[in-house]
Image (cartoon, rainbow, N blue to C red; front, side, top):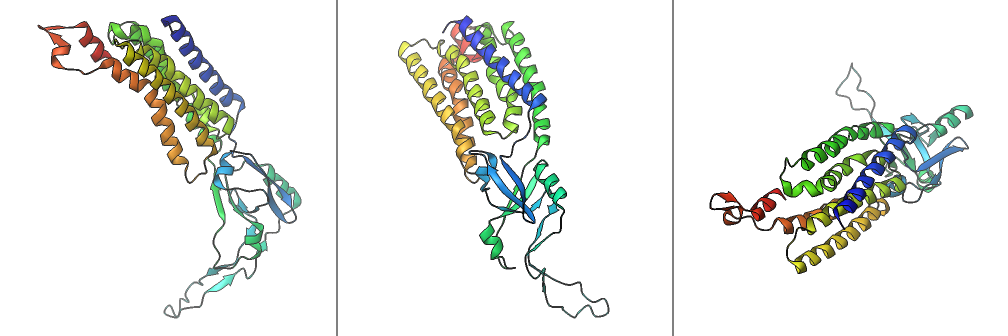
Length: 315
């Protein structure tokens, strides 16, 4: 892959990543991945999108909604302790169960419909069988929280440093401020550094499709830089091994991106760690190989920096 091809691919990855994130900010929204609808005297979960955040959280169709966005729909029996009598504070009053049975709140059909159409920020959900057999000693119902549009607004703040790194990095490296050896990989290096920030609005939607797209573009952003670094490896066999490593870690990165959206919420942290470790390794392995061991004798010879020493230090 020659310099022009690397630059075009890297620039295209950055440009498309930015364009998709801007589309999300202008027209997209946060998608928890499930919907509710009025049923009898309350709300029930009607649909759960496959591989959505809700599916990973354990939300299932048919679940009854106990509360939605802090609006209580069903009151569950629970032990409550009365306030002590001010005239006789040492007298302990026995705990009482309130309410005595599962009690739906009286809500009009119009209000239920309005709630069903509102954005889901937080909800308490329970399976119908668990609700029918609920006692004060029962455990547990499912509580979910979704940051909503606020997460996208916060993620949009990452675009400014991403753009600064992209354009500032290209300018700084292409002018030789970090050494002549890095001029030829100015655009790939800036793209690889900026893209993880440029895709943040897509990640913040929690939409399975957009999370996958963001992950794939992040993997793609690393490859031109990794290939450019591998081409600086003098030994042919070492260069070939590093190209194989780039391919292997790229595949692992893609698989880890898919694992993030298919793993349940309890185990997703491991998939996230694997994603960033594998994606980071794509340029890191050839970068370390291109730099090679940095020793005093390699960096300076008779008071002057050798070409190999300069390249090693810069990389």
